Picture 1 (cartoon, protein in one colour):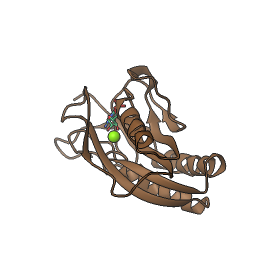
Picture 2 (picture 1 turned 30 degrees about the vertical axis):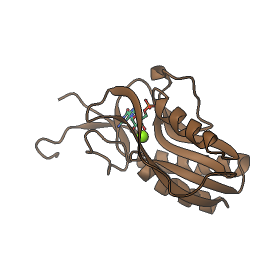
Picture 3 (picture 1 turned 90 degrees about the vertical axis):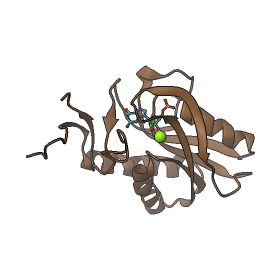
Picture 4 (picture 1 turned 180 degrees about the vertical axis):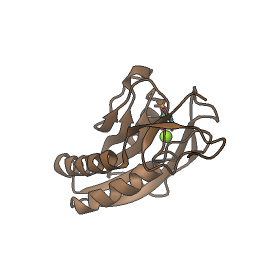
Length: 180
Ligand code: 5GP
Ligand code: MG
């Protein structure tokens, strides 16, 4: 039974599927990247993914420094405004470091490109990227992530950190809202 007003959600990736995939991504990062990484988490949507990923990285033998950057491209609505804004910067210097940018979903590509270019401009030794979800059908900017959890179609997903108007971030799975 769902509470009145709460919309029905169809599961796209279950909590178990996500957990398995996160371990695989961490193992892949440990194999392909250095053992010391400066992980930069792009808030807000990726905080749940990042929380699981950094612990999986630790199990995989990667020593991660973790910092956060807040970028916003979406307002309250689920359509991109096309413009990326730096709302809160990292607090540590990235110069000379092996940076791994972690984001929730790669959609138009504007956010990830903004973050990557910023870290390259600041003199990071290497800048690699990791996203839980890739939505290639909606790409506007030519960018691909180095590590991808799952590919999704052109649908608006919520859960596991991803929101709609700050709702649904706490779902342990990723799903799509059923039309009311
Ligand atoms: P991009 O700059 O690649 O267009 O957008 C990336 C950001 O838009 C993501 O980090 C995420 O916050 C938001 N976004 C893109 N697609 C979705 C989606 O399907 N669901 C949710 N909740 N957010 C999305
Ligand atoms: Mg985001």
